[in-house]
Image (cartoon, rainbow, N blue to C red; front, side, top):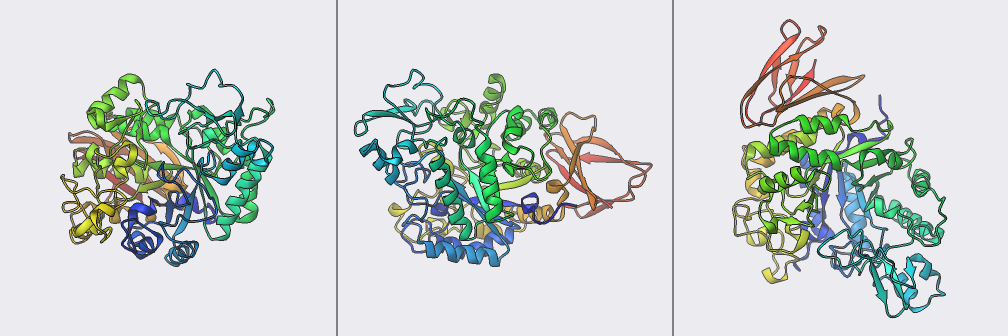
Length: 541
């Protein structure tokens, strides 16, 4: 039996951006006051952990990921006092909070970078990565191809070139510098003291590059992950680190270690093959991705997701499969981004078909790991492709059919981003209030599914095994612990299929958790007819 201290094994995570969630002071920008007003609504979904996107002081040229102060709250969003009050209320409702730790880079407006540019003898000069000459590989390795021009930019003040894996206004920190590592520990310690339960590590693969030009060649670039983990364990024993690391499966063990590095990784590979399977109506790609997922330490966990605040990255699919996914999920050029991804939300990609949307969410909730839900997905929000880049999926939460979708009573021109209003996904057609009153809505289904997921902890904390049902369109698997066993069966096709499940003779009954129906296997087998895009969650009793 797993310890309840390993809460991340039982987590259902809800991801949101404070500035687009709820405006509490009616200036057109979401804030901690507004978020606090909506905490009971989040808790009512069945969520037990909130992941906050960056809320620190920022020039806001990259959705808050360009940070100029790691120890504060952006004034537009409130004060540290408002954050502490939010934390108190979340804990009262039984929800943990994790926050973004963005330490691959800072804003070029951070005081550290100002000092570095102005004085090469300043200790902060070595906080960044510099070169007197422009490196030969300056035009390689850009994260945002087609948007970025280089990974090195010349600073007139410093008289040198500085490295930036992302935008030029985000100079990379020199992670090989012990002083930088100490600063990171201070940042973590500060927010742990204010009650957070962990950190989502932004851009983890780039964070560990150790690009400092004086970094010893024999340095173990993953070693500092152990040191951060040790620091975390001493400061708050059950705090966790969840890494954004879109890496090949043969690199996974470098991040988990022997259970002494990171606690969680987003399963990007499984995410991409989930969409490929949905597009091709063929579960074999999902099965293959699951088979190729390496074993991880007992304390480790995968974060399972469908959509997030970035593009749907399909870069690890073959070119043929990626083009096929583009054609099905985002066929127009303005739906695609960076030659690898799609900048749409889930519902539009699946043609707003309730059967396919529920099927996809059912997969997310039952694949082995902890589900991560992006705000607005519980009501099937759409996207605004008129907005630039990844802002298309970062529009304000649609709470009601009232002015500005109930997000804010400020004048429309003052909103942080426009609400969606002129499509089938406009707030008068898709909003929380209307769906709350409609028992057939996606919101009601999500509430029911999330509560069922809480009762089926084996999906998150149990052992995993695929079940062969001799049907290419169907994914079937089981998860079990010493205390119970559950199964999930999903038909990815638009046609009805029949399958046979074979059971041990000890199985007396099967409870369909979502359908509240009891089955009794006959002669050790059970035939199931799966409707188009159908699914079953079965508990062995």
